[in-house]
Amino acid sequence: MHFVTKWTENKSQLLLLQEAYAVFGGLAFVLAGVIGLFNQALGFGLLIVPIVVFSALGLNIIAWALIRLGVEASAVKAAKEIAEEAKLKKPVRRNSPRKTASAAAKKSRRK
Image: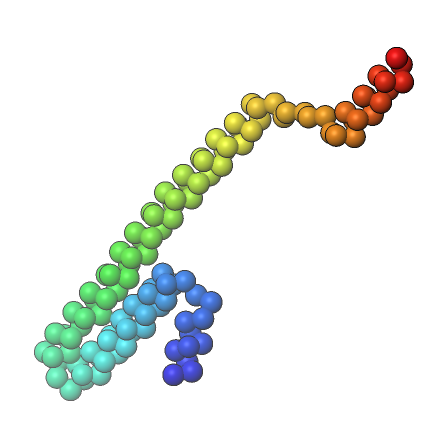
């Protein structure tokens, strides 16, 4: 069980899912090969399992790559829009309380 806890720490759910697909597909492929040594028809029949698993893994990788591409592209676009808005707006300069107090003191001295 230590292997499972060490494997799951500091990894995203997506990466864990993809690694699980790859491990399960590899084990199913090896198992189908070993069974195929004794019974060829059953071995070929069991090859459908790793084919399905590796197909699901491939589709999962492609889908997440497209999702990431869309999310990152929209995030970059939003960041550029925010930067453009920030450039267009002029910063508002406000007098600090010290400057205002000193200006008032100078005016009272002049009188």
